[in-house]
Length: 73
Image 1 (tube, rainbow, N blue to C red):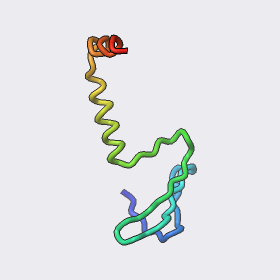
Image 2: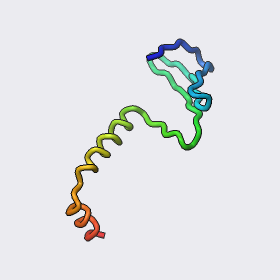
Image 3: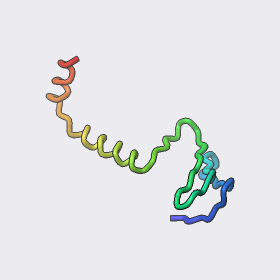
């Protein structure tokens, strides 16, 4: 892990096309802005982990389950 010290208004660049800017520091919270191409997905980590969990659960769906879902529609 790379640890950097930045002040409000300072930014870092990742891979020539992602810019992370420190917008505000208030107490123990830091507000950041992220500029990236539209094809780059950006999630808060807790949301990302939930998506991964749901994707893993979806892998366990059987063909019978899918047929039952089709019948509901």
